[in-house]
Image 1 (cartoon, rainbow, N blue to C red):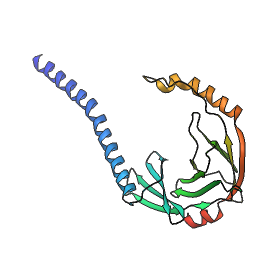
Image 2 (cartoon, one colour; image 1 turned 180 degrees about the horizontal axis):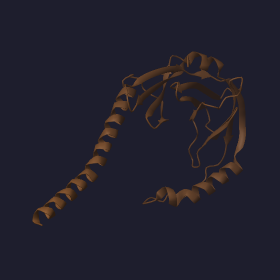
Image 3 (cartoon, rainbow, N blue to C red; image 1 turned 180 degrees about the vertical axis):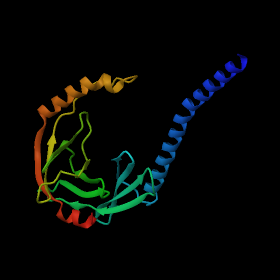
Image 4 (cartoon, rainbow, N blue to C red; image 1 turned 90 degrees about the horizontal axis):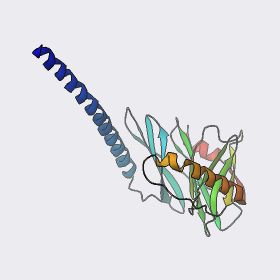
Length: 224
């Protein structure tokens, strides 16, 4: 009986050890993966103006905009769960906005499996609270509070029309105030307030600029 109790105790201890150890091992693997991706991203030596995170499970990406002569380019660091990381460099193109005070650059980034569209907005007098893209699909990016939209990263798949074109729409709006509620379940607790604020922003936003962009050259340059 004593040996049986000792055996049961040992089994319980081993089970508890596995219960604690396995999550720690997974956490350490994820930490090393993230560190390796960050090192790859920083290995370019560029002073990035903006940084975005993208990718799906098993294919993490960090994407950055950097100055390239008189314009901008994009560096994409990709690191799959299995295999080596890769760096991709793609140019950004200036859009014809029709307004001297508003400049927009766009470029394709990511990789062949998950192509992304990145836009960089530079305004003399920032107004944009919401940016919308319309092609074969619709995408939008908005900030509820007093923050202006200056970058937008979105999945390129299914977005452009059959001529590789998109329409960009810029909207101005007053920032909407709402109280941040820190603590446990913060996301769930704030969801109703965020939804109400988003609805108010959409109701009050005003279109101030609209223009097309053509991705034909950008798509051809990727070779994907």
